[in-house]
Length: 98
Image (tube, rainbow, N blue to C red; front, top):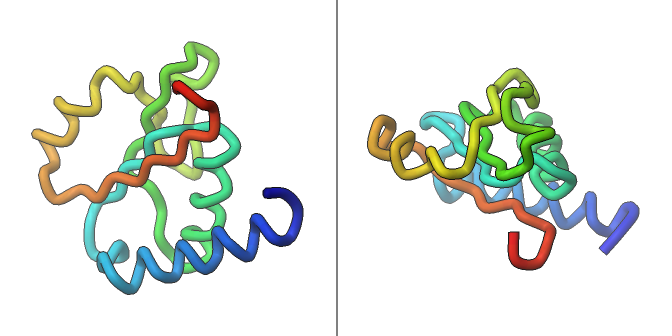
């Protein structure tokens, strides 16, 4: 998917996630700090919802900040989820096998 169609899909997906899972009232984790994660993050940001923490495996992304939240290594996901059990996790990985 590309162009406007992909954006429409992400906007629809973001609205549904916010409504069904009350994302404005809980921490949000996004696994995948690349293109796919950025697309859903932009759509959620337009609805006033921002990620609390990002997870990625790429050394180029780990340690950076996306939309105001830190990108940490994906290996820390289980530990972070135990520390914040109410967090909602979105998997946003666009690369096969990632």
